[in-house]
Amino acid sequence: MAIIIHIDVMLAKRKMSVTELSERVGVTMANLSILKNGRAKAIRFSTLEGICEALDCQPGDILEYTRDKGEEDGRHVSHHESQK
Image 1 (tube, rainbow, N blue to C red):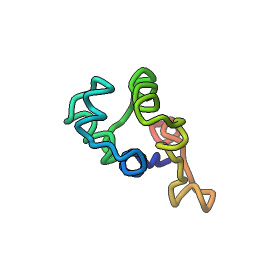
Image 2: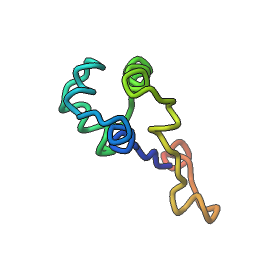
Image 3: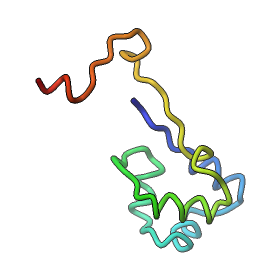
Image 4: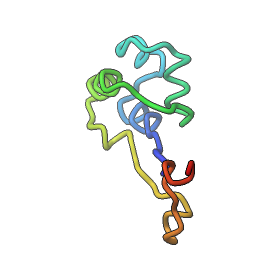
């Protein structure tokens, strides 16, 4: 599973800088950079809510789910199964 982050797209649509978003949401520039570059492993609902409020958008406007290649051809093994 891959989650793609589209914060840059929404920032451009809203003509807002990363610095302004960081200040409005109360998230450090470093953490926002990790999130927008797809390196985050998780996001707090409160952070997601703050981003959506600041960008006047829905979670689906900034998050997109895509299947991994193995999932597309039916060979996906869940994380739990792979540890047996």
